Every structure is written in C-alpha cells, then in structure tokens.
Length: 456
Ligand code: DOR
Image (cartoon, rainbow, N blue to C red):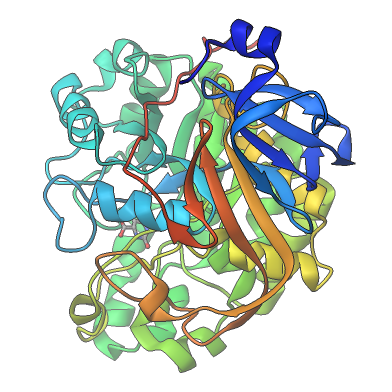
C-alpha cells in the first residue's frame, strides 16, 4: 500500500528505497540513499537503518541523476504513426534514461488549437512510459489566441518554425512573428533558419542531388540571419526566447551577447557528428535541419557548453522510416532518431572528458526545468518528483539498431561503442526500466508548469 507523503515520512516507510548509490544533488555528488513515496522524494541521507520500503534497490556502483528531460522530440502522433507514436516514442525515452519529454507540433493535423492539444493528451493517457507535455505551433492563423493556448494544461509552450523543415508549420514573415511574440509570456521556442534564403538556395541541391551539399544549401547565413531577426523581434516585443538546435559558431557568438533574454539548445547529433564525414558515412541518414556542419562549428558548440552559453541539450528526435530516408536527396526527409541515444552519447562524452557529470545534469535536467518552469522536476531534493535516471558510468555497450524502440527502427549511431549507460529509470517513484528492461505498464502523466514571470 502507498502512504500519502506526510504519513510515509512519519512512518519512515517508502514505496521505493535506493541504497548505496552516488546521488547528483544540488550539492554535487553525494553518497546517500533516496526514499520515494507517493511519487515524490521524501528522504535523502543514510536511511538503511531507519527506513523500510515496499521495494529496495541496491544501486552500489551506480550514479543517480535527476530524471533526464528531453525538451525536443517529434513523436508523430497523430497522423504519421508509421514513423513513431506516443507509446513507442516514450518507450525509447525511458530505455534511454529519459523521464519527461516535450513533443513538437508538426504532426498531422498540426497542433494549433486546444482540440489538437487535447487529442494528444487523450492519446498519451495510459500509453506514455514517461511524463510529457506538448508544444502548440505558432502561426499566422492562431497568433492572437496564443496567450490563452500557451497556458492550457499540458502545453509546454509555443514553437515556431521560421524556415520550413518537415511538415507545414511556418511563420517566416516579421509581421507574423511580431504578432506571435506579442501574444504570450512564456519562452518562445524557435527553429531559426531563414525561409527566404532557403528558397533562394534550394536550386543548389535540386541540381546536384548530393546530400553533401545539405549544409551548403541550409548554410551558416540561413541560420544566422534567422537568429538575428528573432533576437531583434524578441527585444522589440519584450519576449523571452529559446533557440532550438543551434549549429553555428556565428550564432553562438551572437547568442552569447543576449543571454539575458535568450536560452540556447544544442543537440547530441551536432555535438557528436560533423561534415563531411557524417554525409560520407551515412548519406541522407545524416540529413537533418538545421544541418550537421563542419568540425569547427562543432568545436564552437562544445566551447559554448563550457562557457555557459548553452542551457539545454535536447535530442530533436525526428524519426522517418528507412525507406523514406533512402529516397534520393533532397526528396529524403530531414531528421534522425535521438531520444534513446541522448544520454548514452552524453555519458560517453563524459567519459571522454568533454563534459562533467555535473554539467550534464545542468543541461538535461536542471536547465530544462529552469527555463521552461517545470514544476517539481529537474532536481533531486525533498518534495520533488521521484524522477531518477540511474547510470553506470563504467558500463561498456554498443548502440545497435535492434535496441532502438522507435517504429522507424534505426539510429545513426548503429555500431558505436559507448562507455556509460542508463541501467534503471524511475518515473515518479515507479521503476519503469530495471536492469535495462522495461517494467510494468505505461504510467506517464502530464507535466505541470509554474506561471511565467514577467520579464523586468
Ligand atoms: O531535421 C529535422 N526534422 N528538423 C526539424 O526541424 C523537423 C524534424 C522533423 O520533424 O522531421
């Protein structure tokens, strides 16, 4: 039987007790036990003598991270469920150590209205393995309604595509962007590629049919110009921004000067792969928007992590089937799976000395919770949701396509050796992955948000 939180504390009785691990708390790494009851963290410390539990997990040798929050995934439901759905997408998430996701609005239909959001919330109930929230797409047709839409329960915020990518969502004109920015207070998430420039340059790849031209078509200027425009418009309208999947050294230099209002996401793809090598090896399977670029851009993204310019690492999990990806470029759709490999790749980067574990926690748990105002998540502390990602930093594994839960069934990292791996995943006190195996039934819930403060 599960106690309510106060009775559990009074009786020193937990639903789940994790003993012997190294726990990443706001104090750093601590050798403490964690007691969970009623979905929350109810005690931290040396608990073995005083506490009893319904279930105890000896996690000696493992590190406990606050549950990983992936604030950019495309799970394709409704409308494109041959690529992914909410069950398979969230299953991949928890197998990869992710406990919450924010899902993107470029589904069929697009997520533009309350009814679209409600349809996703209804579809997720009883089928999602982790917690979730959904972005509303910002466009000319719903701009004036966004201030009420963004506050609906289960809404992660508003997402704008300034350049067309996959699907029909687009807001590329300054006047439309102004209308969107003026209607709402939450941080606006933006895909920053300049549509006019993409259109001008599309002939380049249509003529060559060569995927090695992808990052020349969608070039540095396309990204920089859009990022400059949206930063200017956000300053004019007094709005906060979140620039998704930043890819260029040039944007990083600009964004570093606007940290008061603007937060920054990078993806593991852009931190791990680079051009031209990725296109030589993977062809259109390495094709994504904004593109994977040359090594000096990747180096700038790592430097931006060290400098504190990057706030969040999100996967931009964007599955397409192998058949779709194998179409001749540029008919091949952009996007790759990523939710399940986000944490393994980052743990491997930790082992290679590129990232500290403390910084990883900041970028994948505390960062998303802070910038999106997620209630009760992102930290291992009393009263917070018992969302926990337990990892073995020394485990050696190989990423394989057959490990990938996505309906699309592939990863660009097939065959890659990794050091560091998620072993158990706990969502609000439920062990949903134990010893790398899925457990029980989907119990994901809608994430809750704090009210957005007014920007002074
Ligand atoms: O490569 C991408 N694929 N970038 C996006 O912005 C959209 C995504 C998708 O939905 O496939």
